[in-house]
Amino acid sequence: MTYSSVVQIDMHPAPYVAATGSARSAQILARLVAERCPGNVFGIRDSADFKGPKSNGFIRDCARSVEVQTLAAQELMAEADDNPDQLLKWHVYFYDSGAGESRFTVNAYLDHDRRVRAKCETDPALVGRDVIYGDAPTLETLYLMLDAFAARQEATA
Image (cartoon, rainbow, N blue to C red; front, side, top):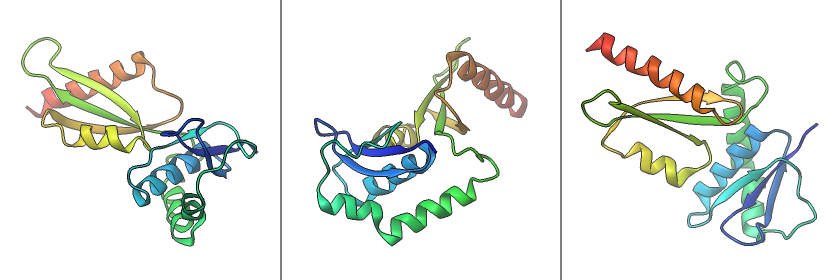
């Protein structure tokens, strides 16, 4: 089993918060803990980092709480058909930058990057979004998604 860790990335060195059995479950835990511990920023690592510095007890207890563990399990179960391998979740945002040949633009961010996603979701130029699972999307993948999105927009206009 490949473990992943949740770490508090707004401190150096990034203190350990919790370890999970998949990258997606670590991503969910990072997001849920960040929602419950505002002002802190959490990220994930590809290994279980038990030997490094530990975050404060409140944060670690939050990650292990019945509420957070139940919500994480429910989210993993809800995604089981779309993401059976529990790969990372990326949110893809499409923006309308006005008239012209390159009218639409695209960006992708990790699910647990709450601050950036909040800015994207309140951007008035946002016209669509999508979700993909796996490694970081390549530029080719993003441009293919953008072309498909632009074609759908033209077909409905």
